[in-house]
Length: 241
Image (tube, rainbow, N blue to C red; front, side, top):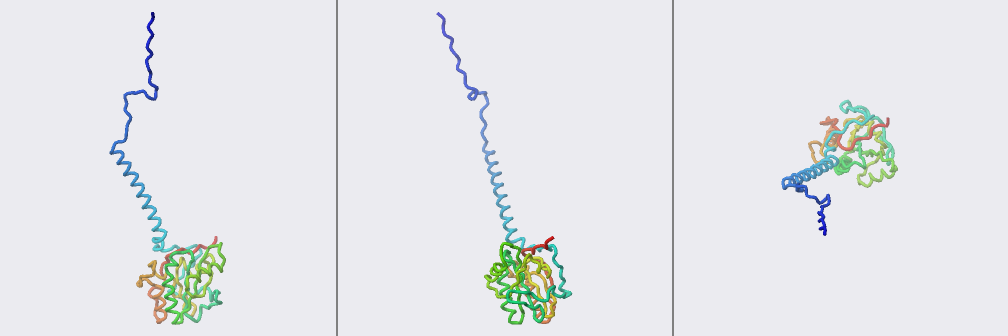
């Protein structure tokens, strides 16, 4: 009588032990990965902070470049204003016969809004001394009508005649490269100041309030301390090619 041969049990290929133990990350490896991920998160966070700072602060502290088609006015030579009068919502305003401050403002520029308290103060202070103010509203938003753009200025509560400057054409003629900005014209219709209201974003630094200093000096028969300054804020659109 034959004896039955025993069948040897074979492990499946996936369960065979080949003498090599599975490897697991060491504590040092885990710590290295943690540091790597933390570093990446910090880098991304710093990049976002830097981008936000640039958008809301640093770019307003950097002088604006000259847009295409913009004039380069030298107020030291007191050139004549490029136009004799401006057709505003309150009627035609002549640039002769009175001291005039042209306030260049953009409804979509944060820097313009930060400058509004200073502009309001200038209007209240110098209008009593015979200075006339005209606001030139720079806009390149084709989705809004002139009345809608004008209404956005009216909502700011600063009472000045206003002119809607589509695509910044008038601003470029006066040599304004960015807003907010001021242009001062004397009673003879000649430009004596072109530039920023203040280098500081919030107009809180009296030492660099160049537009106010120029107006004060001019009314007292003196030469402005600075007739021209760099422009800070939102660049005026370039002329169409």
